[in-house]
Length: 211
Image 1 (cartoon, rainbow, N blue to C red):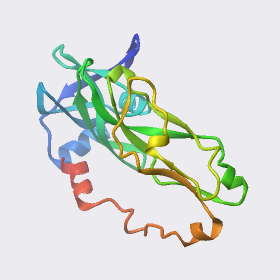
Image 2: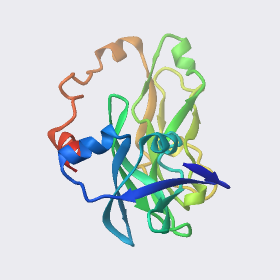
Image 3: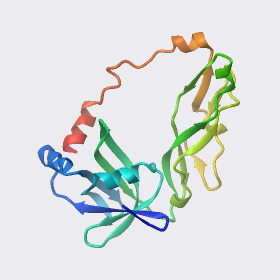
């Protein structure tokens, strides 16, 4: 990946390998299998350098960059989805976009401050770590800062409480609870997901190896 003004660049190579064994060989060689979706593509299979891809992935899924395809074609894309295991990228989906057409993406929430209720003995909990917004690609942030210092015990922060920059529209339901401060006893009684529920599904395992 290299910088070209504000637009990062990532080089991609077409691939015909779609079976598990061939994909494992690609990964062992430091490559990440990927697919490009969009108006000019019908699920084009490619592969990219893992180290360069990680540099792009760290910026978040809402940042546009150029995908340079072998043969000279360059298209603006976003990361549509990515699969990881044990710190390694297994597969990436790219979405071709238009710079002049609004799109909807999920943007990570960057919680700022310490909730007042936490200082009073309450337990701060996050129900959501990202919100879906719509805007032009150039207006999409890599994260949205949310100040939670004013939350007291019993308070809830909903999606509509989040202040968005000009040019962005909230797509997530306004009533969706993003964070809350629970009384200590209530927090202890909250059910937690079992270890089995946290395991990847069979479908996820299959896509990671066989697409």
